[in-house]
Length: 340
Ligand SMILES: [Zn+2]
Image: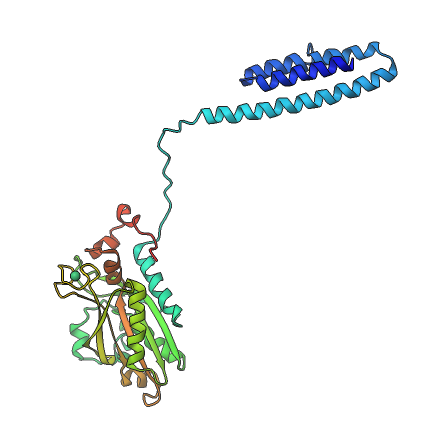
């Protein structure tokens, strides 16, 4: 009996391993383990003719064989399943593209700007987009009737003496009112001006404002900080140039240019053949601005800067029309990945 079982087991295992389809495997299962006429079932049935001792030993052996074969059947079935699933895939078909979201280029550039300055010890802060004239103008040394108030900004006024902020500089005032020096902040945000919507202007755009006030902050600190920023942002091979400028809230004031990233300074249409690209305005905080927030300008000095984030993004990504940023064209927006 034991020999018959061993033979049956070997035959069955061989057949299972050789089964090439699920149908074939099922036929084998019926042949060996089928309840009515399965070969193993026959063996078990014949147990009744044996004496008790034999019944027990053959019965145990038959159960072991039954379990082994059941395992072998399920393993082979799983294999055949996997194979047929594989066979169902046409590997020559093009893959299905997964559309994953990506950050807006302005978000990428804003994050990068904030990253660079936080790396130098600045803290990111935000301010309101609806401002009073005090924060947007007076406190920044732009009194009523000041030519800058009319000429530099066309503003969106709201009822109650409020307006949509025309620059991020009011955040300087808000932070200095609340804190004592040292103050070292970077404030990105949206600003509004009544500009035409064309290739280089938008009525709503983004700025990042920086401010550092403490004892003994000098123009050299301003230059050093912004040179580090420029090289981190645009590459270590660019050169920087500060030229005199005017802003009511800084004295002296300057504009920072970098050597043209397109032509390397030789001159091209992007840099108007000057070899330089202006990237931001900056200067030493005007003593009157410090007095307006209750700081003693004899004791404290500071520098401030403000840059257009679109401008930085346009230079970095070589984009020639600011309107691309707001058109929500997925073909444009999906091209940007963090590049640092
Ligand atoms: Zn150029």
